[in-house]
Length: 343
Image (cartoon, rainbow, N blue to C red; front, side, top):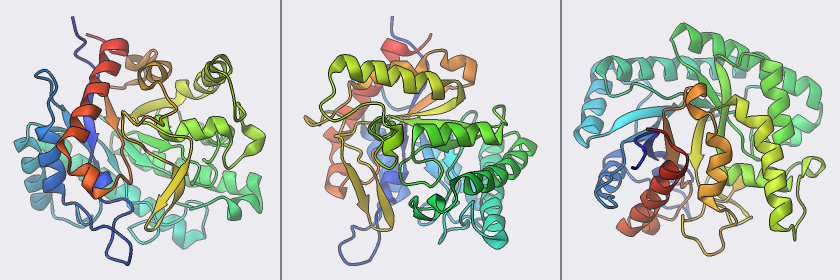
C-alpha cells in the first residue's frame, strides 16, 4: 500500500528566481500559470497536494491587504492545493537586507520576518495553510565579506536569527534556514551547523535541506576545508560521506526539498552561483534521489515534517512550461514518499 504522507508540494519560486526584464533574462512566470502547470501534473491518478510559496512580487505584494491575501488563498485552494512553507522576502531589494549588515540592514531583515509571519497567519486563518515553515537565509550573497571575520560575522547572523526566531515563535511559526553555498555563514555543512548551534533555538529555528545544495556541501565548493569527498570518489566513499553529513544536519532538519544536481554551480539574473538544480531525470545527475532523500527523512514525523517540496530553481522557462517536466518530477516525488514516507 502506498504511503499517504508526507504531502507532495511543488515550489512556485522557479517562476521567479533568476527571472527578470534585463538583457539576457527570461520573464517571470505568473503565480496563476505556475499553479496551472502544477495542477496539470498527474501520475497514475496521483497529483501534487500543495505548493510552497515566495512572498514577494510579482507573485505576492508583501504589503497586500488581508482581503487581497485571502483572494490569493482562494485561487490556490481552487486548484486543490494547500500552502506549506513560505519564503520570507529577506534579501536586499525585497523587504529585507543582510543578517550580518549594519543595524538598519538587520532591522529590514526582521521586517521581512514580520511580513512572512503576517501573510502566513492570513493563510492559516483562511484554512489553505495548516503546516510548513517560514524559509530564511542570511541574505548575504557570497562569502567574501563573511571571511573578513568569520567568527564575528557568524555571531552577528546568529544574533539576527535569534531575534527573527522570537518573532516567529510569537506567531506560532518555525523558521527553516536553507543551506546553500551562496549564503554567507551557511555555505558549508560545517558553517551551517556552527550557525544553527550558535543560534541555539532548535524548537523555533531549524534547517531546510535541499538535495541539490547539500550535494555541493559534500564537495566543499565554497569551503574546501570542509569537503567530505574528492572528485573521482567511489560510490562507497560517497554514501559514507553522505551519512556523515546527514547525521550532523538531520536532527536540525524541519523542511526538505527534493532536487537533482549535476555537480556544477549555476547563477541567473541577480542570483549568485549555487548548486545547480537539474531535471529529475537528468542523465548527468549525481544523485540517486530516492536513496539520498531517505537519509534526510529518517524520523521526519518526529521533527514536524508533514510535506516535502520539489525545487527546480532557475530552470529555463521552456522546461517549466513543458507538461512532461512536471510529470517526471511528480513521479520521483511519489517514489520518495513510497520508499520513505508514512501512512
